[in-house]
Image 1: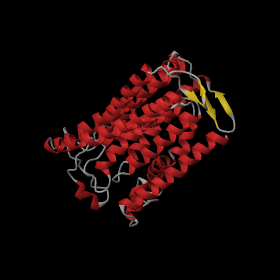
Image 2: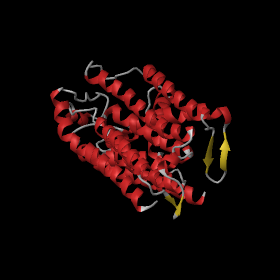
Image 3: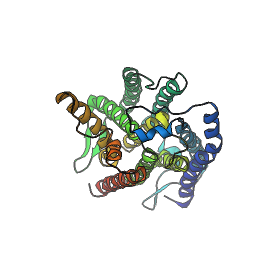
Image 4: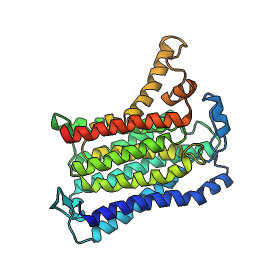
Length: 349
């Protein structure tokens, strides 16, 4: 990519970072004033009770950073006259990248998917902190909203030219109509997995930051240059949010933020037509999700015995005596290794 567009993408990330970071100086005290504090579940680790009252819905910080920086980057890229470069060869301008209906659906539909996920999370958080119902939306309500949103996104992609994506070492595969249920499954699974990962200060934000950077690299390697804009915007926004969320956290992202992260990462993976790379990229999220499924299943089968000391997985390690900082460091390293594997699959697969 040429220098002009490199500067614009860098500026997109920096702008998203600054918005999320600086907005926290105003939003966090405001959330305190409104008493939008997190209620800590009694069945979690007992030492988490000291976090009672910490403001939640902090995902608003990086969502605003994401939206404003994406819009700014798109405006800038649409107004430049020099073409984007790929492997040093002039190819297309930003308008050309979004010239077809399918390209527009992948880009703007992906952003809509992410915002829709964030809205579901916001609704859940609102019920918890305003209505004082700690469990928020019921599992059925949340699932129905996720299924509706993800189905709309999947159908749009399919109708406007989707149905195919790349599988490492196999190549492009046409899934036909099965593309729709597969896409719905991945979206629901990924968003719920990132939601489960948000339980330790900085964990979901830092792993999401690493995953976003990996997808930024993959967007360039795969030639889907337009996907680099939301990828760098998410990375920048999460970096700014982490200024407030690293241990000891001054604000939590809430379901507002964790579901949004899952939505963006999934949209990026389908945007570059390589959703299978979410397996190595999201290996930690998958482990967190599986730990809950295995714990519940084992509990029912054995009539009360537990496979883990507590689930999701990060709580198990807390119960084993690991500090929050150690969990975040190790889990982020696992995510980094998985992301490096995804990049290697793109290069050699």
